[in-house]
Amino acid sequence: MKKAKSILVISDLHCPYEHPDTVAFLAACKKKYSPDSVICIGDEADFHALSYHESNPDLLAAGAELDAAINHLLPIYKLFPNCTVIESNHGSMVLRKALTGGIPRKAIRGYNEVLDAPKGWKWVDDTILQTDLGPIYFCHGKTTTPGKLASQYGMSTVQGHYHEKAQINYISTPERLMFDAHTGCLANDKSLALQYNKINPKRPIVSIIVILNGIPHIVPMVLTKNHRWTGKL
Image (cartoon, rainbow, N blue to C red; front, side):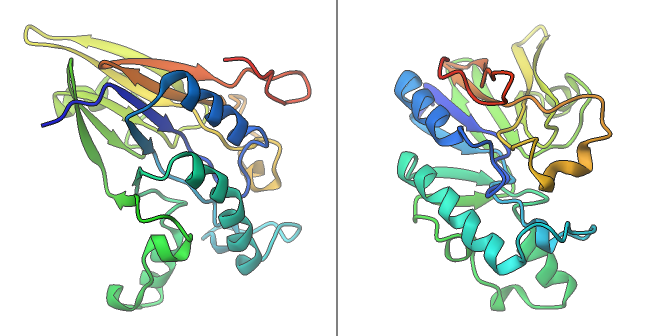
């Protein structure tokens, strides 16, 4: 099996409520790291208007929000025409709502059609990539406990979902060195769509993860006091 040398993990975009400098930041990351594999760890779209929780009436209605999410994703599709996307609580909202309404899967449009995504974007429950230092398991988010998921799966793991967590923990066994990583996010903390988290004293960390020859690195989007990217990696 071919081994991935440079893996770029895009974290929780929540389009159209992603950080306003996301595209420029990802373009710089692509240029610097030249990824041969791209993983979107989930929550590529927010679908706030379809939430099972209260929707903010000052935000877009469902149809307008979907159109806006597609428009915000288009430059990301252009940057990364091939991407593996992990199923997630926000990203899978259309499917979740359809199932709640009793609509059979056969009658539901695929993600590529819903989001006008290129054929190279493929949605999966989770995925494993091979690297020089062993396999790495990717999922949206299963636990906040450092090291737990890697210990359970017996391999290195990468998770998203937990916006305030951008961390890498190493675990050593007699057989291998493994890591357990959380990506942070690319969502705009200032958006009304993210205001449900305002009472959390821990603030989101705007970042991605790049894995080079099996070794993970957190790449933060360093922000100014005005919450904009400095333009430097």
